[in-house]
Image (tube, rainbow, N blue to C red; front, side, top):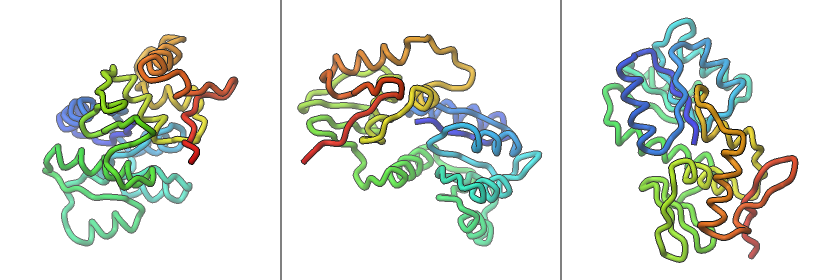
Length: 221
């Protein structure tokens, strides 16, 4: 899962990145509204954490313009503004949630999980696929009730594919989800991760659509 963090406070930004990466998220961090709007328009993120009091273009304007452009990425506003009108205006502008500073990191993480569940139409905290169960909160996966150890990228890849069961995800889409802007990507890294997941579960779990990408097909009943 790839998160866009828009926050101009350097200390808070560093703390949030540490917290979110420990929770298994891939985080891109920007500090002004102009860059944020470009990123929302041009890149693929699963969720946005948006401060309102950012330079060049304030967070409310970023949110309003993004929704005007038809961008539906879930947005959590993170701000020191705490009046009822501030919250109402933020939600009416298209925010999906609103968290006031200072905040508890675990509450933030729980809200993010809830937003992602809703975005993917899930009510359950776990993702079930046949005999496979993925728990985003504990970052654990079991198969036939046996825990299967996964490396961080393997877990992120499996979650991305399971969240989009029945959809072919392009190589670019998957790599954007797994890696940040400044990370170097080996040319065969994705294929290696796919190979490991097939080996740890079963070969038919992830199917290759040649020239397009990869898919975990929906289970036929």
